[in-house]
Image (tube, rainbow, N blue to C red):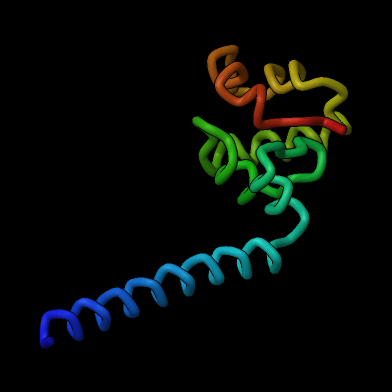
Length: 106
């Protein structure tokens, strides 16, 4: 009897933890700003994303390169194509290809 009670208690605890974790993730997504929601969907707009979004959502992009993307955008206007990312100092073809499916410009 003791083993059954313990098993039921443990199962209840783990079930509530799973539900709580799922609810927390849903709440975070619902409260996220537009750029972060776009990031969760898999596309980051180079013309609207902030540095934190670029850094968090793109492979091989740290704080300096994220700021370089924003500086390029501010100096030259919006990106007309994804390939224009190659014009940003420090971003080469390998970085572009790793992130091609993650970015948009519209």
